[in-house]
Length: 162
Image 1 (cartoon, helix red, strand yellow):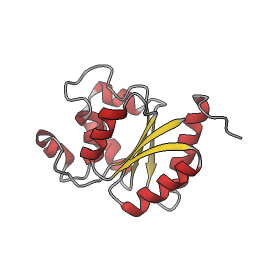
Image 2 (cartoon, helix red, strand yellow):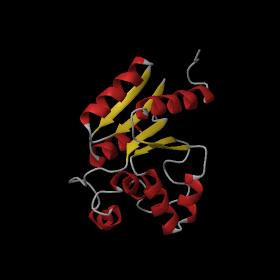
Image 3 (cartoon, rainbow, N blue to C red):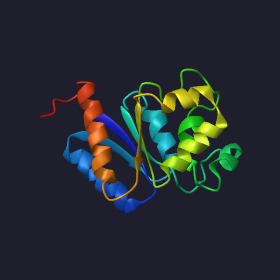
């Protein structure tokens, strides 16, 4: 089974994508905040194959306050949670190493520029790896997310795809 952690604060988008993935025999752990995502991660990280993440999300009650300035008022909340919230001690390899990450945003170019400007070598290297896919939100976002996950699942030979 292919297990996906889906993090998106927009209910309509989250439910549509969750239903699409479940219909294609993926297990989905779905949530609307980074604090709920962290709870799921802490409980299921050994089972999770992929994380689908909205970047622009509200900062919620469980978010590490010391990281708030880096979110730029919520603009990069999802990314900051993924990169720093899940790795507070800056260990190498990062806890998400080996997981497939799909990052969704209407501002992918701005996010990439933000990452480039920080000049964190590990973060830059990870963003250029085959384990991450950046997808612009738009009319075909859900199809692109599904296709990226299906391809990753097929490459891992976790499920025979036709």
